[in-house]
Image (cartoon, rainbow, N blue to C red; front, side, top):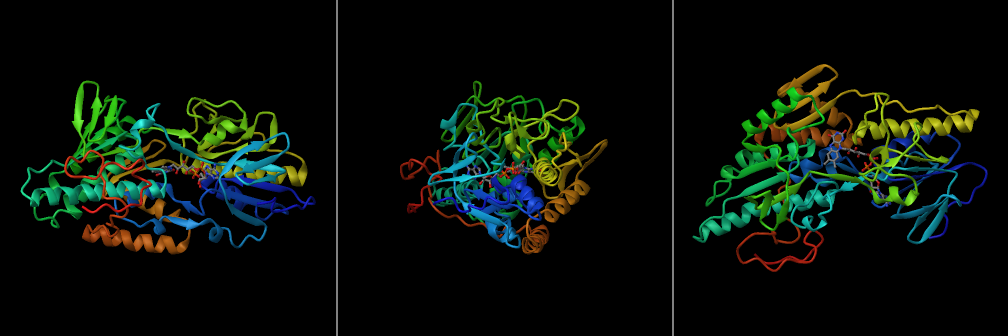
Length: 446
Ligand SMILES: Cc1cc2nc3c(=O)[nH]c(=O)nc-3n(C[C@H](O)[C@H](O)[C@H](O)COP(=O)(O)OP(=O)(O)OC[C@H]3O[C@@H](n4cnc5c(N)ncnc54)[C@H](O)[C@@H]3O)c2cc1C
């Protein structure tokens, strides 16, 4: 691929990453006399807050993702390229992909974050994390496959292997995964098996710190734990995982059997941050100036999960969608003012409108400043906010209908097992583990 545009007359802005930050920056810049190039390694934007619904078969991938091209199609000055950005040459002002170098006048890097296994990458094949649509489908596959394997084993007269699902990490993702798994096993699947009782599935949530949802107020953490317990989830706090193997999770000397292990414990910023040559923090986030620019490079901005910036109280801004959205819009404003009047707003301020975490059906917690809500009302607020912010009207309407239907019927319509039928750690006559089970498309007969 050669450089796609060569016009020198108007500034070219390259945006790396079409997540919440990148898309909002692109949309806010689109009305300026500029060329915008959006580069993403995928051709779709993922609404990550609803990934757990895909992982637990409540929604299908197309209901929480939308093609980047179609989101941006009305802006004639935006070109979209599907490409993996490999690095940058800040001195020459070019972005490097595997087969091209694209020059820019302004650069916005919004490449997000990935899983972190705290130096134990060998755990990943046994404990997938939830960050992408592919991750969600792999988790869905393992969860549903576990029930199928157990049913077949029990039907053949073998002693049934108890089903144990272990979720590592008690942040919002771990809490929503554990709560929803409990709901599925106790309701959605309860009457569909003949030889096993899915309601007997044991769901264990392990949190290394002293409480779940550590970013929330203590009363909401307590409430979240109680709501999890009511759904049938066993919660263990101060439980630091020391080893993960196929079929088992260790916390110190205690070993927990695990049919399916899910990782929701750590995130690290995209490796692209390191390629900018600036200082990064322990999580790989780029330490940016108050206006989100790169030190020494006022024409380069880093936003969203990849940026490390503290608020006016010295507290690090969290890796959540509203931060990325507001940062994307702010950076667009900086560029607009510089182009129009040669001035720049000095600093980004995050407007925290509150936090919501869902736990399961009619179970959630919400924190709006000093107002703390739990249970059904919090869940309704969560539902409203998440449907409101879904990209694309078609998705919003479909998702709403889908949810309303599953609320009434407990049905989870996307219960498809696709790809491999290998489950790491399952004791019976499984085929040998492929090198990368998540990527394998070989179908092994049961
Ligand atoms: C399971 C889950 C649940 C969440 N729930 C919530 C929630 O309920 N509420 C909330 O506020 N936040 C939630 N978050 C966090 C929120 O999704 C993130 O804070 C937000 O997506 C960050 O936006 P971003 O633009 O920085 O990055 P992202 O939205 O992650 O986008 C990054 C983009 O960059 C692209 N990219 C990465 N590397 C490259 C490369 N080398 N070349 C080209 N493209 C690249 C990716 O494909 C992606 O499209 C959740 C996150 C997860 C994973």
